[in-house]
Amino acid sequence: MSVNSIKFTGLASGLDTQSIVDSLMKVQRMPLDKLKQQKQILEWQRDNYRTMNAKLKEFDTFIFEGISKQSNMMKRTAVSSNKDIVSVSAKANAGNVSYNISDVVMAKSAKVQSANKISNSTLDPTKSLLSQQSKLSDDSGIQWKGESFSQTLTGQGDEIYLGGTSLSGFPDSITVTGGTDKTFKVQLIEGDAPEKGTRAADTVYVNPATGKMTFGEILPENSTVTVSGDNLKKNSYIEFDIQTTNEDGTKNKQSFKIDGSTSLNSMFSKINSSNVGISMFYDTGTDKVVAQRTDTGILNNGAEEIEFLGKDAEFFTKTLILTEKTAGSDAEFTINGLKTTRKSNTFTMNDVTFNLNKNTTAGESVNVNIQTDTDSIFDTIKSFVDKYNETIGAVNTELTAQRYSAFQPLTEEQKAAMGEKEIEQWEEKAKSGLLKRDPLLTSGLNKMRNSLYASVTVNDKTKTIEKYNQLAEIGITTSKDYLERGKLEINEDKLKAAIEDNPEAVYQLFMADGPTTDQQGLARRLRTDISDTMKQIEEKAGNTFKTEYNYTIGKDMLRIDDNIESMEYRLKQIEDRYWAQYNAMEKAIQKLNNQSSQLTGFFAQNG
Image (cartoon, rainbow, N blue to C red; front, side):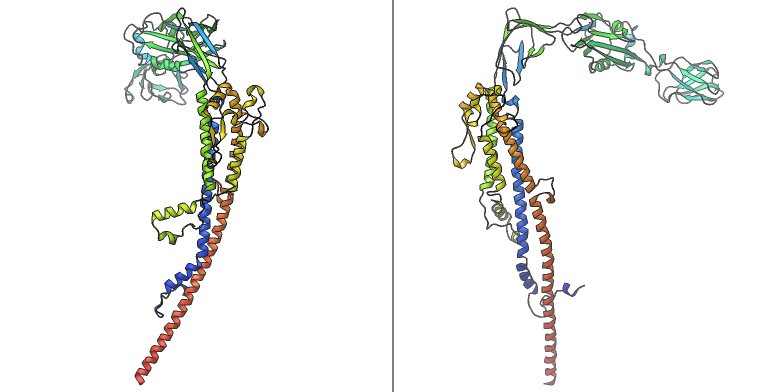
């Protein structure tokens, strides 16, 4: 232990050495407190910058999702006089037009259904096809196929695991060829086969659960054991293809393999979820199956539109009796006096989508009107103006906030002497005005204002008219109240009139594109200004993903951290020196006191 680490607290001198050293160090620590206050101010300033960046980012996203989208700025209303017959919707590019639709005959899809009942008793479509086969009126269309298993013995033996899998059914006999040609009768067992000597020589004992076969005699080497799959129910299956015709005339063919454990409903689900384009179901009430095209219209020029092909196509034509056919038909209607047809009941014409929902009666017609959705477009622009005002208001609040220079960040000692509410009120003033007249934010705000006030030159003159090349021309101006600091105001009547007059021109005012700034719309310019300002702020204040080494304020904070570390080291040395001095003084006084006591004692003895 060093001498300086031993502190004598006035035992000899009677002084409060600790208090004296603390007072001396308090003066010495004042520069350190200032450094910590400087760092705290930088942290607050950084956080304020980042808050501004978050505001700008929020505004940029708002522009992108709102006023920049043509679908919002050129929105159309599509009104049908009878939605039960014809419903409509319109895209932004649809013109302001009217249609009269009459003589509607809806398109129908081709279908094929069972000509008669398919079962002779109650059929359960949720049970396996195998279990329900006996209930079908005609099961000749089901030709179950099975997997054939074979295995060759590498040596003599009487036991073999065929595939090592569980089997739910077996044939009556199993054939062995190679070393010997012989047919064994099958006896199904549970557990182990009989002991040797008790087995019948012409029998093979089969455990279906394990697939283990034990023969009644030893099989010669290289014998091949073959189990025909015709009766292996677990592995029984049917194969078939379904083919449909697409609207463009191309064929769509899908292949299916259905095993015997699959139910009728499950088989239909597989077909329905495929890309073949049909929907199948079994109706328990009529005991019939229906297969219907998902697309409407005449798709195969009068030929078969649903074809069951492949090895087991008769499962559909014989067993399910799918022979009663109904051809598909195109939609027919008259639009503005022109009689025409469509494959589908939903079609698009000039960016207007029509949905035919019901046939018309004689003399019945539907009027459809497509108009500019003035109110919706107005709301989009008003929301943009409100968000702009909110954003520049937040920036102006920071730029004009009062700076209370007397309110510096509190030291730990000062906080210890204050209540929580007092600390909160103090720090509120200490944080105020840290970005007052900030040149970076001021520059960004000025750029945004200039971008909004300048006129726009649209390259494509067919999309605009000259009178709508500035905000003021559509009723948006700067507030005359200087306290609003550049906020925008809307003349509602003038803006709505401009929207009704030429929504395309209004959209181009905000979103025109071109190689030069004057050819770019106001919202485009704003997004560029916002992006540039945000980059400059990030260079100065960083973001949550950047370390202090990667932005200006962060580097300043690191420099202050280095100074704090150096100063704390020096302060430790100073404090140690003070204690060394006072310790020396205490020792000297103690020595004098001891000498004085000795003299006093000497004189007392010799007096």
